[in-house]
Amino acid sequence: MSETDSFIQEVTEEVRQDRMFRLWKKYGPYAVAGVVAVVAVSAGLNWMKHRAVETARETGGAFIAADIASVEDQETLIGSVDGKAVVIARLRLAAAKAEAGEIDAAAALYREVAGEADLGATYADLARLQAVRISVAAMDPAEAIAELDPLTVEGAPYRLMAMELRAIVRLNSGDTESAHSDLNAIIADPQATRGSSERAVALLLSSGGELPMAVQ
Image (cartoon, rainbow, N blue to C red; front, side, top):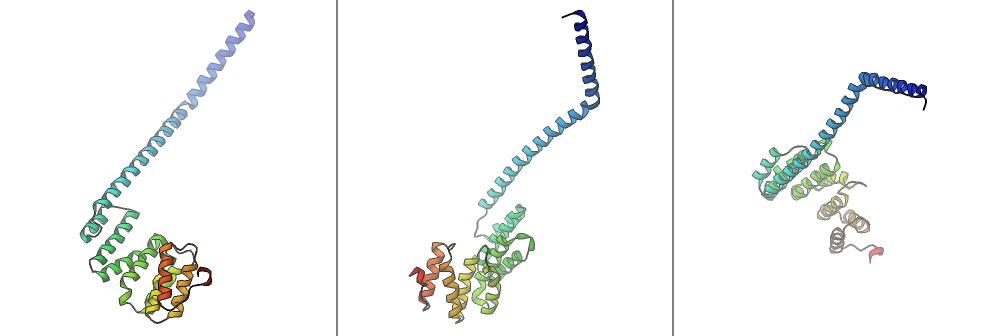
């Protein structure tokens, strides 16, 4: 390499380094800030994930520790959890009240939960179904059926259970034809569990109905 070429190379290298130095001086702080931000976000996400696991573990422990049959334990549980866990705790409290014979109080709590619009059908429909189930003996049949009807629509999460309970109400009120229609629909439904199908068959036959040809 000639001295001229060597000189040009050295000058070019110095210019390149000088340019890099100026660029770093101008944009370096932003690059450092970006790296710090990425590290901070990563650390934050890891902390949130760890905290979520810890919170779930603590919540699960609180549910396990609370005696499911104890009204007092369930009331204490409600005060020690948050978020959707509160809804589950309130449903457990209603169940404990029903088990203790406090039917009216339990039904009222179930209906209170069911009336909260932001819960979604999974919780709200379950609460409404339970409210009818525990108090159906004291309800007017037309009132019970009116509460159950919205729970039997296509796509409702507890549709078959609501239809079964509605069939029982109809049988008890003498509306055998409508009851048999509900029971036949349960038997023919591919989503029906073995238990619900067997109960529907038993109710149908014991009340004078006939099995659909497809299942005979």
